[in-house]
Length: 125
Image (cartoon, rainbow, N blue to C red; front, top):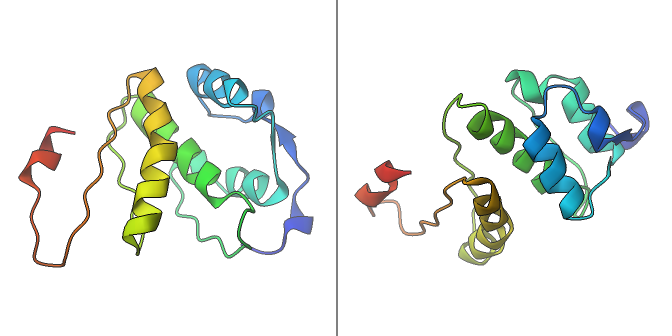
């Protein structure tokens, strides 16, 4: 994706393809408007299943883009989602953020470990 000047912010209520429950969840968390990079991800097909690569600064809204994709996929019954991060501390931080989705009956789990570790219990999610 290019710089944030490409796409104007959009209201959460105006995000096409995002389930109503997801919109209500975001608004309950105080998120009413998407930043330009987030709006651009939506414009480029995030909620239609397009692959998106974002290269934006810290705190520019990458996690919200992932949350929207997860909510779309899970709340519409299209499947499951997996969110990967390179560090245990970051995994714990994102787990806390994603755990809020349990309000929407979305199961959230955390698994960390080395390349040879196995977590068969994850198949229940």
